Image 1: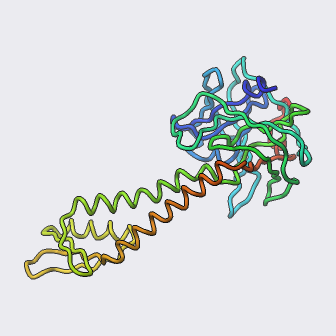
Image 2 (image 1 turned 30 degrees about the vertical axis):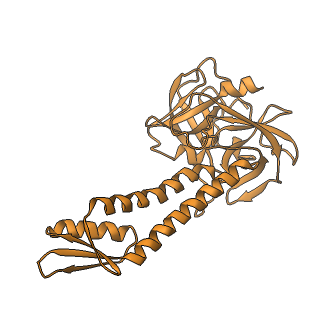
Image 3 (image 1 turned 90 degrees about the horizontal axis):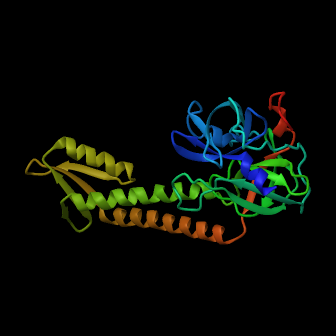
Amino acid sequence: MENVIKASTCRVDADGKQIGSAFWVSDNHLLTAAHVATAQSENNLTVCTNTGEEREVEVIYSDSNTAENPGSDIAVLSAQNKPNDCKILPVSPNIPKIGQKVLWSGYARLFGEKDSIDRQRFGWGRVASEKYENGGGLFFEIDGNFNPSHSGGPVVHEASGEVVGIVSESAGDFTSVLEKVQNRIEPLTRIRDFLIQRRSISGTFNQGFTYRDQEQATEDKNLLEELGFDINSKIDKNGRYVNYLDKGELAIRTSQLQADLSEILFRSLHGTVQMGIGVASGGPELRKHIPVEFDG
């Protein structure tokens, strides 16, 4: 069964960047998660098989699952034809009961892996929850480890060999950890670079940055305000432009960013070393929008 799943599952790329996984359900169609299909430009999507063959694909159906418009998180991709060595996975509209064994696959990256990978990562586990509705979608949970780019891969019932779900997300939110870390590191880096590059006059309570060029003073003022600081701008007795930054505010803002970063890293480690919970999209929606030649 693992060999069949391996031969069916593809990596989904957009503009040369890996964005998720998908799997063949007919000679011309694949299923994936809607958030994978819409992650980049829908007009420039390709899939790459486990043997390295590529196919251009088109999104012919997508039902995103967002807070504003919750749906099934299912998308259908069309391709001119599948490679001969790719397998077609049968799809079931039925969600297994709690405790039944399932396995899943995808071109999943480990935390910190940024580039596209050419190997699949499998997981084995059991259904961990009853099926439940979320807007227009039907979902269920699985115990096991799910990583970025598992999204869109097949969840297969071990006993029947049928696809019963599509990997939608990890309850641990692993896919956004790196982005959250970068969002905290980037302003810290900009603050550090600013303080290193700009000569300043240090007072008791303020750090003053002086300029003869008003345009540069305004540019730096806008940068510091963007980073969350309250800037007091004046012209000194020598006609220079000065941006005053409160020393206490600088320490507080920097500490806040560092504390946020530490919390994100701690939560990431805490979630990674424990058994994760994956959320899969399944039910009748898996087959509802597949064209008639669907070989399920």
